[in-house]
Length: 168
Image (cartoon, rainbow, N blue to C red; front, side, top):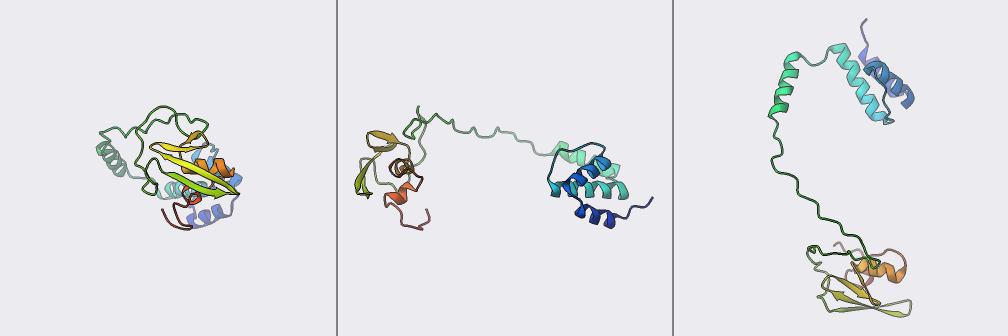
């Protein structure tokens, strides 16, 4: 029996996901749990075309296997991800790790940033590794700004270290 491939492919586009799952089971001989309509349509269309026009030739299969054997394999292991230390209440990490490069928008350690917020003067001391506010050390200016305001906002913007809308 001759299969009309364009007609079959057009019918796939009109099917619901559950109908596509049924068609997938018919064509592949096994069920699928996916609900990704696009993936189902593509896989079924590929299989219909492969069945009608023939799959890869034996020569093509051998060449693919040959290429897979000769593929460049990773010789060196991937770089290890840095360890993540648990957070303290103030937003700093416990333990010691090499610190990333400091942000060039920040003033040098020892500088005290001052800002008025709701009539109260907020003072934050820049430390070599963190920020001290109200007797507690925080890992970022944003953590300090959140402690002050109760909601997330950019610490650099809150303390006037960047202009509104400036790209960093």
